[in-house]
Length: 477
Image (cartoon, rainbow, N blue to C red; front, side, top):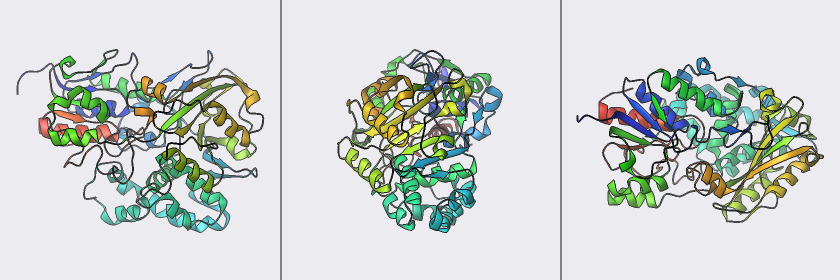
């Protein structure tokens, strides 16, 4: 091979870029990460967005997939400063009548609170809990023949259905509402095929390892990954935005933690006509409008369970959530949007001054929307927590264009790196023998626009690194 500045260069330092760089550096290669922003992290950044002393997660907040990541779990991240706090309840789902369904660490406790749906919940989630250690590498990876085909088939039979269809397994308002809130993380109409997948994974994750809060902010996950990467010999350069291949140092392999839109801008001239055509037709999904609050006190939810949960799904019944997501998909702004809310400071005192609190929330909006949804989101919270508005000391908001400006991977505010529907769940970003390999030798994609998609788990980066290691360096891991 010709002499190069580095064996591998990774463009972008989100969780997938960091994972890819670590996996390659672990094999004794020389690896450089180049980050366009002044700080590393991608969706793993935290800052005092509202008032001094109030630490807010700018993008990602609660991390069930990080604590359950097959790759992250092999790394000594605790030795590099990563510490998790665990809410009493992973999630709560309040209703207008003052009650709430909950997702707790215990399968039987969660099921037992669902009344006549107790056994139905156990039948849906119980087998998945048993199978998860066997199927996790395949669920969180590219399409391939699974190591445990029967267990994977059991997962697929439910995961590939629509959330609306699977909801027919439940009779009670509590179970159906709880399920709808989980499935709505797919950021699609609940009637779409495969929307059950993310709901099943999130519920399973809660029963296995919980939905933890990283102490000090989500940035501490990126900091720990970067610290470990540097400790094993890696290098990181920040404040260097890459817009052309000519701006990169020489390397045998380049891995891009970007979406197809940026990849085309940077390296499109190197790709085959077919691959370019596929990337140009890659579809992005709904965006988000986000609000962070500095609060004088905790949110006064009517349902006591919601005061004990790290995450609160605000959307009432499955019918209301399904309507909200359908309207957004059709390019409309819902009057009563589904709101995902996190209250990290209840479980991590480092997030706010003594006696004060923070809260983080977003709702789905049409891709590229610049409509201010602050009042609508606050009205939804107030609906289940009368007096909430009186506790707001300050707020910080981000529409879809501001989200994309902050993190260029959030095209139109899409935090999943592209729609994860049946048409793109297996073929993101293009139908190829390897989704990570581009049509140009030595260039790879390692972002959430590859399998398994969005979430802080690093598995897109890990699998991209495996592909590059085998192709370029003849190393199998």
